[in-house]
Image (cartoon, rainbow over all chains, first blue to last red; front, side, top):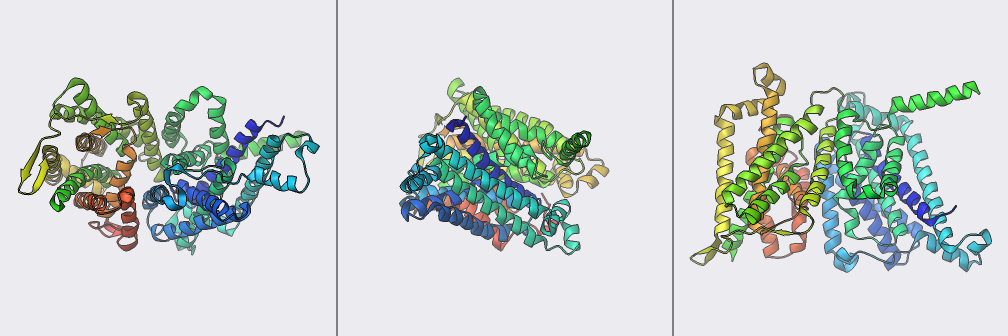
Length: 313
Length: 295
């Protein structure tokens, strides 16, 4: 039942959902950021270095990772968000590459292209703590590695649900309606008295913070990071999660990340052609369904059917 | 030493300028950043490499072959990925950006499957020929690259300002609807712009192959990113800006490597973007933001 392999895939799906949401939240005000891999790497490296070199506890590392990514997001966002979306896309793309080049060259701190190994693992650290307190997974009928995978999965599930709750509350608030107005028509929104630059920077910083946080989690789940984990392809992959799943509703990136992470696992033979498929998906979707697989009408139809079922019962 | 670096920088810069011209033409007419341009450039380099190493073709034939293939790719790109999105209501301007990202990912992997991974040598029969003028050594390859790029830039400028099609292109860039009211077949202009821009990418690919003596399927992205950096630096849609920006980037990269930190070479372009966006958002040669659309 508790198979570490399945749990690991599930954990990666959850991390990818967080990453997909980080792009979704920036897209909420119609801004396309291609720097998610860069922010992710800042979060990952911050948390990894703090825990490995300074021995800080993991939760502090995760918070610091998210925070530093948010600060970088603010620094990049302030000058670029006053301009049109295309500039932002290129500036963030450039930012991601600069960050990667810095991590490769700053060898004294980051060990360069070799990467950082031996990052404290989320599950193993918790198990070690519990064992020191006299707990043994066998008392629950679990092997050590099963316990580790299960803890990681549950922690990630909790964090993902928390993030989803936060954003669904946010998007249905005054702030969320301001986001929607800006996305629909920025000039009209401004004329209605919405401080568009403020809200655009807000979504951008939130996206950066979330990507950094997800990156930090990634570091503590895999235990090893290198600049090769955070290339342009990672940024495109994250973009595809949101664009494929649906960039207008919160469930879009959730579905996109889940489906696209599972697909290569289910169809092993296809994984070689994964990027062919990603490329084709992007082009075909932009032609036939630019809003992604899941959009509001589809959600309403699904909800309607559920309600009908309730009425019948 | 200084003069040799200067020549290296100008050679590199003129290749960058040609890549950037491909971006700036498409952006000027369509307001679209063609993210697949770097990959089309890479295909140009591979076609040139195959023609020269397998069939021992002369450089001009290699250039011709690269132009043919990349022009065809530009045509397909416009028909399959750009035209279906054009003129539709409610389509975000980011849709075409995402669509061309899709094409670029596809092409990069197509090259991986067709040509394999790793560096492929790009042999030229005249690679070692060099001249000594006073204290300075110049390679023949550098002269050829410079000659081709100057020819290309002068040709493009003249075509844009004098030829009928060039004028139609500028009119379309100025205002698509008005141009089409005045009897310009804007669809055809747009297609030919993308085709011309792509074949310039193909030419740049062969030139890079000659300059560095190798090609690989990863070379599209960094070159594409530099081209983007240059058009932001020079001003979006500005032809002169693309040329000047290319030279500035080529020179600064060469001197950075010659006198200091080679590892950060690829970062210069992006640091430049961020600085430019802060100080002069419309670029060095760009019009103010409201009137920036000018070819």
